[in-house]
Image (cartoon, rainbow, N blue to C red):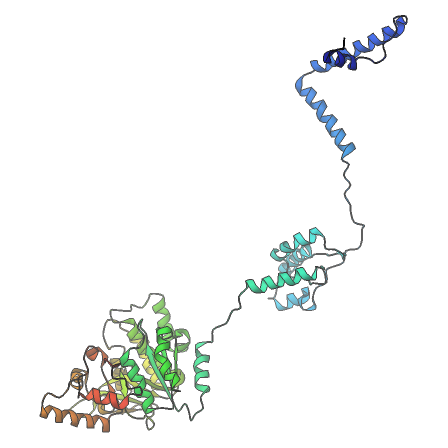
Length: 478
């Protein structure tokens, strides 16, 4: 009969050598060892749980020190050598280029700098510690001494890849050309013969040029083909403005649209302080369009800065200004005295830094009123010229109304009407010939004529046909 599994296990864990019953001493010794074993096990099992856990923990600590013995490799001691810095970025030169320091601040700065100096040891392979410390060095407050490529060797491929990513992540910044440089380059890029006249127009509005303004430009270049026109506008430097100017540029005319730089244009004039107070909210802009008042000021400052000719965008130029210098036109005259009673600023022709322009700008800044229409425009130039009448040092000429304003604003409608009968037809023909022979421009008084239609056979229809360049009759809805 074979023994069972339980019997076999019991037999395996018993002493393999069974003492002989004839040897009582050996049997006694075996029994004593078994009793001792049972006593020790019973003693251990009777111990408290916390004490038993402490014993196990001590055994584990001992076992850890004996089995997992740690050996930290410390490099051999060698004299510290400062990292190689580029000559242009040495500490001495950095101090020279920076601002001056007092003795106390200099000593504290030196101590902080000494604590922040990084020392590098030449190695065949870059250590992990140097790689992880490199970003910290760039962010450090006192890391003014950059490490060169020679102090830390890096794989060539990795360096090229990192440089390429850096160049791709930082887009190239193109600095805009300053306002003054753009205008000066525009004028300087054309010789005196090809840029004989410097014209300025302003448009401070959200709307770009329409048919009427385009006609004004055509008449300008028709009478002054060698002119240069600068349009200072916050709306013409756009895709719509580019489409308006493209036909002129394609024909070889010199025209440029540019956004206004008020800080530069008003600098070193009374307008500078006024505009600063306007931006701070100290100046009340009033109920009159601020764009209109800014245009009144811009034309004065532009001519004062650069000199030239200013014309409104609703002015149709009929003849050349080659014989004019430092002139302003009268809008009305006194029938009794024959002297002018009101001037206008729709057309101004002045040299650079002319003293009358300076007085105009000063008057604008000191007496600005945004609640009265014309107070900062036609009435302004009238006030200043009346005060300066007879005073030496101001060389300018006031032209008769027929030069720039052959038709007053109250009668501008008559230019848009076609002949009603034979008598009216004769009057229109006489008036047209008078304008063509005596007037240099025709001011359309945009405020009063914007909604008028150009009737067939009217004075305006004849003027348009004479002054247009592209002459698209379907284009003009003046």
